[in-house]
Length: 380
Image 1: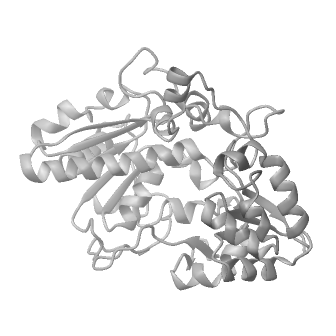
Image 2 (image 1 turned 180 degrees about the vertical axis):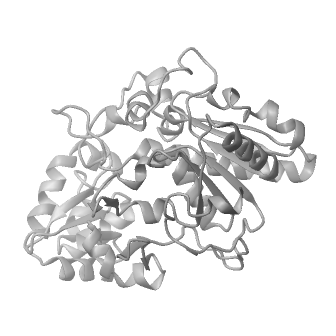
Image 3 (image 1 turned 120 degrees about the vertical axis):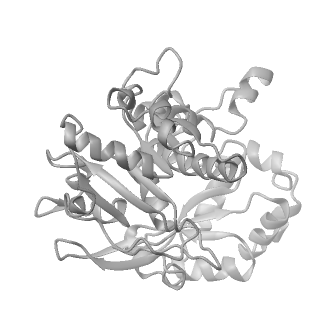
């Protein structure tokens, strides 16, 4: 894999230390944007992500994506020679990205205070459950726990059921994204000061940062946000509605002008001026009743026809997609959000494309998940 790319982070070198999702997904994003990412893996099987999720012949179908654009270097940090190699890389990289338990880097002489002696511009980005400081910093942190403590689990699911998760590793992925954002900010500042710094991302804080005004709602008004199923309480209509052919279509018609257009599409224009439905507040008070009226209409129409009608009336709507829908959707394909590569195991693998799009220095997928230790000899 060549480190020469046209991506916006071309020339940036990242040393990735860590496993699973929160750190490695950040490494994937750095690689997508053109950085050279050197991933250190244990000789004892490497990153467990090689075996996680859906597998074919014991190999993960996730691995080619989360490890794309990375070099795999095997090193046992308990071995003096291997550790010396990794320490040397730490002095040569712009960014050291890690998601070990706080304090682990210092045991191996890879902490910021040690690395900065030889590499004063290094940026050490930490991803952990609770951050590098505070009374819980030493605890093991997982994405699911971060989602609970960050508040999103309390607001996810149906009101009469236990808190639910959204079906993906949301906490880990949010932490990874904040790690990238924070590192990019530190790289920008370094261009002015010439100095590196540490970037401290806690999974629970990455989740909490998305919780909108829920803290102020309770602190000031005594309103505690809770679970409300597929809607936001008081915002209507904004729900998934059934269609005649068994699909579900999300309709976002909560703004007054949009709701009026939806009423016209439903051939019930009088609803838009009826005091029961005419205002955002009135619709919110009767959201379940309104959802029933709309569902009674949508379930008489096939999904394609419904979407065409809503598009004709400028009502925001979209089918509730599965992966099967994504693979064949013309918009996904036109924006290169479905890309195919052959994995190291010889499997034709579909993966999502690079986000966001850059007009002049586009990111790219230059390679997919390497075999364990594929690039070790480059650094011995």
